[in-house]
Image 1 (cartoon, rainbow, N blue to C red):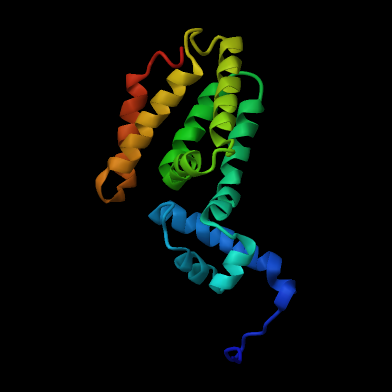
Image 2 (cartoon, one colour):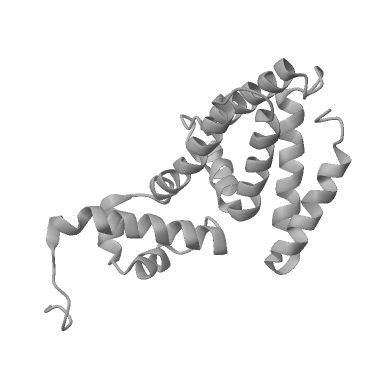
Length: 188
């Protein structure tokens, strides 16, 4: 089949650009429509064929892991920082990512069910633990705060995100601000 006028098949030379386009499209669509967005929509949004998408990302998890690895990297970097405010920054970042990219959480939940070797849960526990230790060291976080407590609070916030009608981001943010008010003991 001939190419449309004005389109040139760059073949393997386009691979890196195609991969970036697929990742950008997936990030947008996962954020807008959730983890279960049709992959055909991702390919269309990226301006590539489904074959190109599947060459780079054979499964939905492969695509989601690539998209959301940036989120883990950002959280891990924040948790590895030192000095005051580390826990508060990690907590705020985790909530922001949950609101802006709820598909991130959906992916972790699905991965836990279908990929027993997936280490996302452990990575999250580790970075939250690191942030709590930093908060303990600076006296900004009460000594009784545990990883389990923080993750429970985060799961409750995720529940708010996924149950707000009509994907109203302003309502979600207001609900999360109210949730922060319910957790005054988290920070001193």
